[in-house]
Image (tube, rainbow, N blue to C red; front, side, top):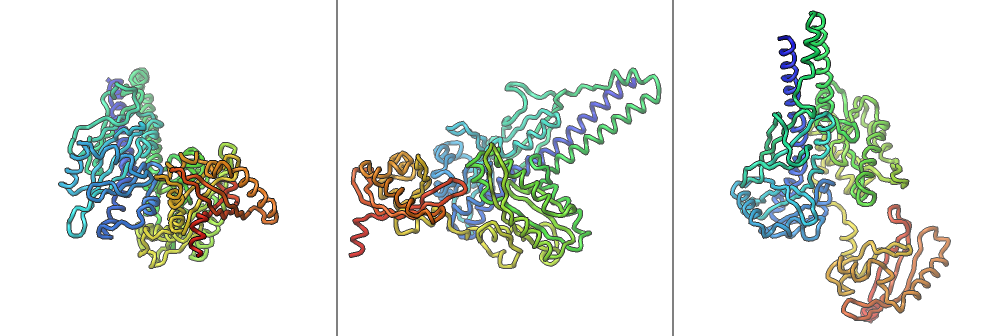
Length: 560
């Protein structure tokens, strides 16, 4: 009887712990998905605030883009007009004639609420979760839709892997859409065709859609203590010992689960939930506090150039650096993809500012796959109690100061000022493409190595060669400057460039060249171009030429 009771109690304790694990990780996944919904709502607010006008879409989308986001699209009148980073919206092109999408958009309009559906499989085999938000203007007129697509399982992959690390198998379900409430299995740690036995489950709603996480121990619900308890039940002391060991193990596991729920698995820092809860706990006892938001500049470029594993190393490097740069009593957390937060306690304003500026003033370097990778940091900060009384208020103001720093050029720290609340993130400075579009002529960037790979061309140059778009331009030139030049002029141009570089040895890495050569357009015309170029050393690409081009015939006509 004792053996049976102990075994039954042990299984019940396992199920209780499993429910607690399910609750903790359901909240974690809920937050993972909510990050995507926040991006959609930011775009919906941008369109609403501008009464249907879309300003600086690409800048806004670039700020909102994260590694787990595949595309961001605006559909005024239900038609894809704005898309980032895909030129025409990969998901929109695939689903625009879909009956399922039509039904979903109809139900979204009827409810007036944001919703999601998927995952859907693209032509390239990727799985994407689609978030759709209807945009109603101030006159309640339906303007169109905001669509953001999230890569799955990337958006919640870290949370699911953490479940396996604490010895649980899982199955993750979602309603197909607002129009179809059938629950589909979308992720599982089990082989195809297998189901969990007698699992516990946790259901939650996000994006007007039901999600369900079910889980069970990898070793099943069998009690491992029936036989030992039967043998040891001969004495009261043995029974007490078993109870005590079981209690201590449960307490230890509960502490481990709490740690997992409040920590970022990649960096070991507090996650957003853990950071806010710890700050809430310590703020009432603080005489003064500085809340700092830090952002790794151009994180997407690191991922694109070196791969996501190197991006993870960059985040781990930054986490270790922040722990060394701030006092031991500071709270440090990774509160977003490449965003970190630091709460500095009991340091006056001048001391905190000096500490922050020193931290971001040092260029960060680390080695990955025998390559040295470098990056910089931007920061914004706000002070308690002078600039904010509560945690959310302080974090919002630090965030506004961070974006002001990024708008001003990155790699700097800004203290919050009231005018920053009025800054629109649509007002971010021009990017390379926008600047090149505004230049009164043609513009080209290419690598100054043997392959002479083309890195960028503006629209004026693409049109000059008679190409439809950038992809057509790259196909036509084979992606190389050497094939951009007329075949009969290639050797002469190369000789002239090398001669001019040799004559400028004292320039120490920056060389100006001036050459004239012919190009052949896609429709067979031959044009003579004036080429004004400068070769510089770029930290990401090595030696690179920046080139301004003018049609010689047009230039001569303009001078007349």
